[in-house]
Image 1: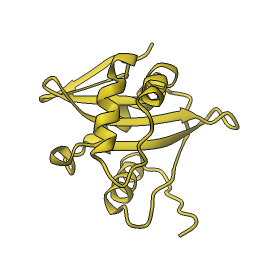
Image 2: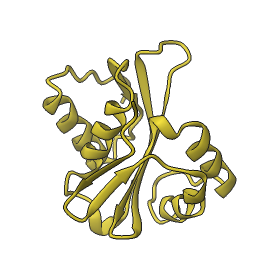
Image 3: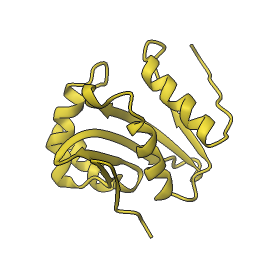
Amino acid sequence: MAIEVYKKTNYSIQLPTKKHGAAIHALVGKSPPLDLNSTYHYLLQSHYFAKTSAVAFYEKELVAFISGFISPLDKKNLFIWQVAIAEQYRGQGLGGRMVDFILANNRQVEFLETTVTRENISSRRMFEKISHQLEANLTKSGG
């Protein structure tokens, strides 16, 4: 059974739906250096990959989005594609709570995979913190 809403303090985390596509597009557009895709892309992602993604609201404002998908090569591997958190909500552990939410909806997942640029220190720290909390090994490859 999928968890639909996680409420803690004034944040609520839930599965995205098609109706969130435009708001996700706007958030990612304000989150450089993320690559901005079309609104249609985020609509499709929120529909077909909802179970492996999450949106977070502060009160009624969409303030964060994480997209991911189960690897077609290995059903135990979750690839986290984009993490967008509005600037004023960063550094509060929201990204980690959203990843926890996604993992709770995908119990078969044993591995997380992502790509993070060398310059993206905040994402690197978030994934380091997640690996520590999960008592998991963190393997880095490439630059």
